[in-house]
Image (cartoon, rainbow, N blue to C red; front, side, top):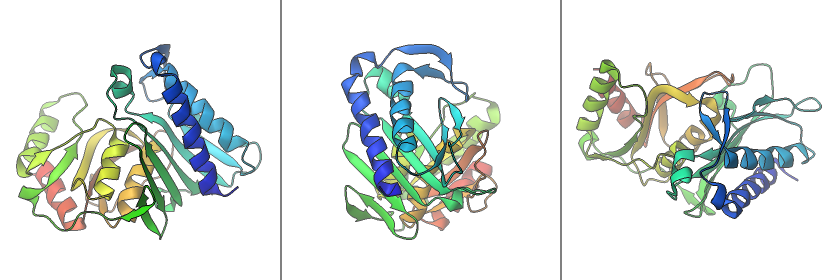
Length: 269
């Protein structure tokens, strides 16, 4: 079985687990994951399905997950799989049908970065959208090639902007400047889905500068890059992060580099 087919099979199993256990959507385990979030029962169940399939695939995966943290491979690892079993847990808990599952794989070596992402798959559980990014080969949505939106002026742009963080004064000021500079905002509360929508041209960009998004969400920025977009880090450099469990993602993803820099400039002004 190829790596891509293995990832797809793992995501199908996780999705089926979620859909067959919706009556448990609001149940918590009573524990907190390595990133400080309360764990839903379905987070654990979906993650277990993914880990089981990756480990039984015949491919050696080391795994970095949202709930269990780093899971070693039995033998020498061929890939590091970065797994978010449920992105949009609060939506799922409340019955809001905007939830995604994401996996990205990077060939395993001593020093790995987000630029090493080889394959990423994101499934929007309730909207029946499956996005696949393969390094150097672009992005498909339900089997059809997609690209980021054509150039748009900043004041005409519609972006996703994540504001879920402690509302310190500087972040509020920066957020207001940024939001006022664009035409409008949309937010699904599943950052992976918003990044997919940016990759597909539905949104012009997605901004997360909270220093709160774990590196397991790498599959989302990979989608944007592979679809022809551009992603900046908080310092204005092309986004390329190490893949340590404690690494947090801060980025401006947009349909092109010019727009990404215009958005970041408003945040930093």
